[in-house]
Image (cartoon, rainbow, N blue to C red; front, side, top):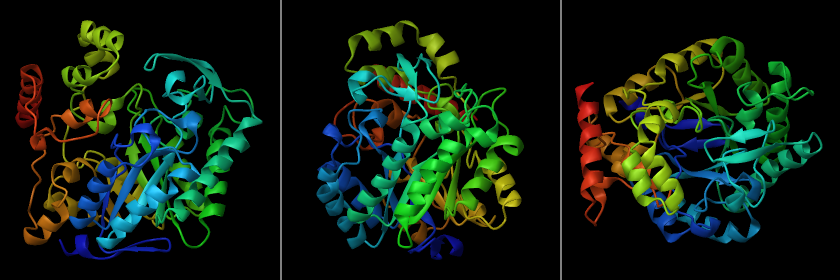
Length: 415
């Protein structure tokens, strides 16, 4: 337990302890600007004892937006972000922000253009036609990552987390599931890493010596015949290490094809469709619920520290690299176990949504377990409204949502 409350060191940044609020999408930025709700949530988590809290999934440019309640890095939002980071710092925590581009995981009515990706095609999950990026567009888009880092510095952030996983744009170049290019950005892994390298060169240049740089990447994509650790993921991590990245968050899954591989459990479709504001989408999902649940969002059993086995292989392969563990941490005992394997820090999301003061509670009780029961209500809700735990809502829930929550929680308790 003592390791939890040791300081952590990520590049030029020192954290007061080894806990980080992971960059789980809050859906608290209507109009793509920081809101009072975003301020209240992150400052409450900072007050609750974490070493750093990470603002989620800010798009580096408008074409990278997935949601209409998502941040986009523009100069006009810097004052609002500065207010947020000042509030986080006042509570004693560091402030991080995740930067990324969603690639094909968007729609024209959100991002303002035909969604782009490594290759041309059709994204069934949006659904939309997708345009493959031209070679001359790639350096321009990479520079947007560097510009976003500079804006993050102006806004007072101590760290940036670059999203290279989960089937978003950088991962769409890395992963042959998406990348069918025949130029120097496709084919071999060396070629598929070129766009990531372009982006990270801009990021590291902009970060200089005063900002910590972390990358989130996939160990596996969750597909039956998907990417392997030895031939794909560990070499990607090695490239990031060579480029000077200060730490790597080890994750997995594709938000399109295998969303529950990263979120675990079952996607609560009744909850998700209840909040949807597009009737055609609501009713199409409800009418095809068995197909959606068992094929498009196939459940994956939840267990504590579900990425640990794979993450330890990275720890062994790259002993000099700092890794941050994420995935299935809801109790002090398991957090201590994970840190005992040599990870620099741990990231958590639902623990801190359920209990923003979870870290402070660990000080009082090293064996404390948060009250999250893994119904995934928070995930079903966040696609339309802000992420929230059903245990803390003021308004009563409809009976069909209550029934769904109870059913999923019973399944979790049976495992």
